[in-house]
Length: 438
Ligand code: 5AD
Ligand code: SF4
Image 1 (cartoon, protein in one colour):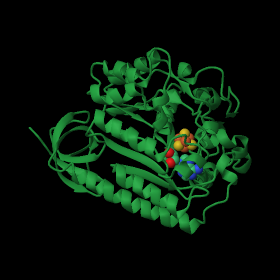
Image 2 (cartoon, helix red, strand yellow):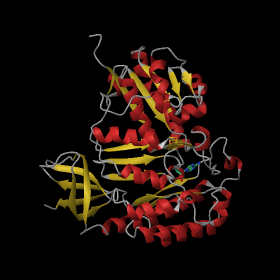
Image 3 (cartoon, rainbow, N blue to C red):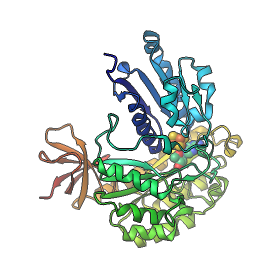
Image 4 (cartoon, rainbow, N blue to C red):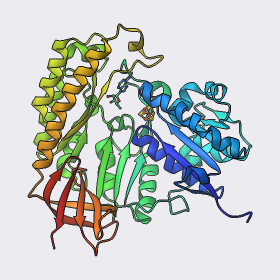
């Protein structure tokens, strides 16, 4: 009875970096005898790994904590922890506002979570510790918290020095730090040894990676591509100003590097880009896209956009729509500007909400048309699909194409982890359907 595994429930908000951190926290807590559960009501510990990027994301934490009150009242020994970027930004304010929270841990300190859970470390840790968390986390070999997934994330770089005027990341994740190549390669090999075939390299500014042991991010990718058993490499998120020639060449030369690039531009107006402190123009971006497409003609491009940034006019918005028309994106994320405490743009005169909303809708309509066109363009092509899970229909598998589209396939004999050629037959709103090519 006493050594029955304790149950850990983790809810992850926000970006892929948080998904990675959640996985590593689960692996760290596995050494304390915790295993993951999908059922919050069964949990001995609930961990909310939070995001601070927009106000809505941050407020979700407090509504979710409110909903945990009855569970905590019923089971006072239930431990509730808040991790991630809201933990970093608000620290002790969280326990003041929500006394049911036992632990608060920032994104640079979560290697201390096991000690915190044992009561051997303070209940609130939001400093940027001297020691590197990666040196104190368990290796990524199989353990009771490891999901048997063929695709995994691997953080290679954290933090950001770019200080875009809208963004909290430099404050919540700190200054740019790149992990040494040797550590990254060792982690990648551990992942491959446990069955991973696709690795997505993560960083807030991943293409700005400048760690020891490689001449730049392109070289790092080339080194990782040498690992036998690894079939696919992706990376996210990138800044246009860090797309070095060597990285562009890697898109031409490295077969394992998938033809997909998420390259946020935020706006197509030079005035707005300047006010955002992006340090590039719309034309710089377009010329960069030309060079990337020259290296890898079939690359699919995706991006992030913000509407209603302070000072944005109708003309600026029109410029953004034109840039989108000129590039042709495979898909893109777009957000209404959300003022964030402590950022330079927070005090500037806002664009009326209704205007920002209308621009967001117009932008999203255009991006949806482009997404549809890109998906329709896949029909008739044969693409590699890495199967990640079983589908709902009998004999059905779901996987990801080279271009990161979800693909549904009838493949009763296939296993999760198979990478097979699939002929795309049909495009649905957010996925593709295909048939195995024998
Ligand atoms: N308001 C709206 N969107 C934002 N993003 C970052 N900060 C904000 C903000 N304050 C968007 C950017 C970024 C993506 C991750 O989130 O487009 O690329
Ligand atoms: Fe959100 Fe940014 Fe933190 Fe990711 S790094 S969780 S996007 S605030």
